[in-house]
Image 1 (cartoon, helix red, strand yellow):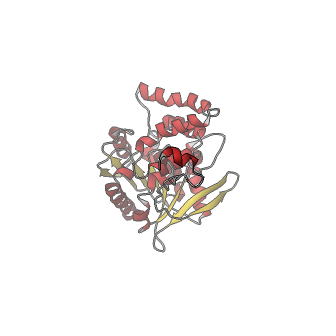
Image 2 (spheres, rainbow, N blue to C red):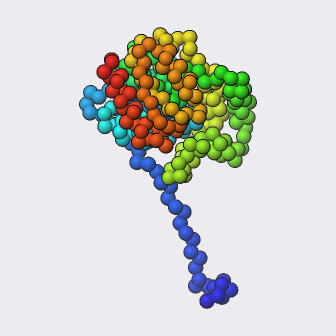
Amino acid sequence: MTDESAEGDPTATDTIAPEPETLTPDLPTGRFVELEDRGTVVVRDFGGPPGAPVVALLHGWTATADLNWFKAYEGLGERYRVVAFDHRGHGTGIRSKRFRLEDCADDVVDVASALGVDRFIPVGYSMGGPIAQLVWRRHPERVIGLALCATASYFTGRREERLSFLGLTGLATMARFTPEQTRIWLTEQLYLQRKTMQWEPWAIQEAAAHDWRMVLEAGKAIGRFSSSEWIEEVDVPVSSVVTMRDNVVPLRRQVKLFESIPDAEVFRVDGAHDAAVANADRFVPTLIRALQSIEHRS
């Protein structure tokens, strides 16, 4: 039968291929936690034998808890009770009029309180590093120790870096009014440089849930952050997980961070800034050793 005859045949049917199902990682179940006067957050709370230390996983800029940590969940959950949720403006995180790293730190403590957790180990990756540092700064009685990964005590130094972060101020204003297509473009530019082919569609869905006004304001807040004046006062065990080929947070800044903290121990991973995903086979065991070191010293 020719194409022409098929067009006139009332019994002919068009075959439409079904859209492929988005491949999603096997993720722990989430639960809703209400934070008074702020809203509801989706929290992954899982793992660990009874009495195991609690680790709070704090994700990086433009990521979500799942995007940052999904390859670490299983390994960490065998030894620790794991708590993870999206920071403000990211994924399912709280929406607010402004973004402040200090507010994110308070959110972490309040989520822990809502779960009945008294003391815990903040594990901060990239942007999560400043949040972890501020958790200790603002709530030292709640912190067992700090695990600081691929992060620093400050993020701008050279003139071009300062201009780059300052430029986010204008972008944050623009993002209040941008159409959806612009938001999609920003998603691709800011996060998907870290994508992996296997999880790309799922990663796109995760990042598309961001409030880009808040995410861009978060970039501005990161550029203005510095703990240099007080980081040496940290009095709990600290483990620094250094990504040796990092193209986002320079190695020299990661080194300066752990050198500024008395008795901090360093753990090296041969990987770039996306090592938690791209080199999980090396990153996760290294992070577990870093956490065990905190346990022993605490």
